[in-house]
Length: 416
Ligand SMILES: *[C@@H]1O[C@H](CO)[C@@H](O)[C@H](O)[C@H]1NC(C)=O
Ligand SMILES: *[C@@H]1O[C@H](CO)[C@@H](O)[C@H](O)[C@H]1NC(C)=O
Ligand SMILES: *[C@@H]1O[C@H](CO)[C@@H](O)[C@H](O)[C@H]1NC(C)=O
Image (cartoon, rainbow, N blue to C red; front, side, top):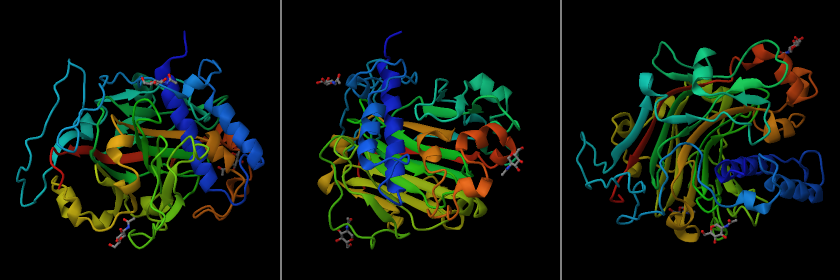
């Protein structure tokens, strides 16, 4: 088999996601316990590594997502915001414009909704090696169902867990799903009751385009180990940056800017992003609070990610008539002034995954000080490596599950 470009694209993307996170978690100029110089080398090595061991830079280049998704054509722009752009076998859906819904002024149409019994329809299960080198065996849908890694609970929520067998010889089974549909612009809403947490975990809810990094990547919910504060990250082609005068005043939870150049190639693949300062945004704080809603609002004027704790979800979202103008200030915001989304983001698939250890979670196993991670996982568990802990401590992964009420995508032909 050749170096499947599809696999390669996602492979590269995940390598990058890791690097970004680790860099921002740094307490010193170190990475994998190595010097900055070594880090740069490491990144280059990682970036050129193909799943089939073809060492070529083209592995970070073009390709289509191997998700079984309908293959998009180049982006089709419809009056400002483009709709899903598919090949001739698909109809390009153009929303009719403002449609009064309930009492709201929402102009958005529901494009996709995953919840309850239907949650696992319309996703492709990744069953290849983890591109981020996690200690996981990603399994296909029948295996995931047979092992109860995916299910619906009594509350009607989808549950996506990892294997909790006390001891495993190699990797633990886990799940990574990619939406069959892809989207250019719109509102992506995750209503989650619980996110995976605990030493060794690295979950993420994110969207990613074709031809990475040209199609861009938006990491909406992400963190490792016992992290308490969510990180939002963009990865793009050169030319996308955050304004220099970017302050915290516009951010509801006082997020910290982690990096202002979103270009993968110019930042050692770190990208740009923000970390919430509020501990109810991720991990145990999020879970103890009954979770909440993340809404990624991507339009031509910028990308905003909003977080609403369970007790403060806007009624327009609950009513299915999203009205971003009523949402207040976002947790993370990436204005178009120095990064026009129409130029840097297109044809995104949604991905939900939980890996264990891997480049990021394993890389900071011995690191203390991050919010929620005041004591390192090495100290906390008494086990010196993440991989050893994952092999021998299955019961520690009881909390390593997603419980999701719904994932919804709204689009509009008109920008409110
Ligand atoms: C990617 O595609 C573009 C346009 O199709 C092409 O110019 C470029 O050389 C390709 N890059 C790689 C790495 O194949
Ligand atoms: C933050 O808000 C101020 C005042 O509303 C506005 O002038 C400024 O452009 C905003 N900054 C960003 C980066 O959105
Ligand atoms: C991990 O597993 C070892 C061996 O079974 C056990 O002694 C230890 O208490 C476990 N630690 C945690 C944190 O689960």
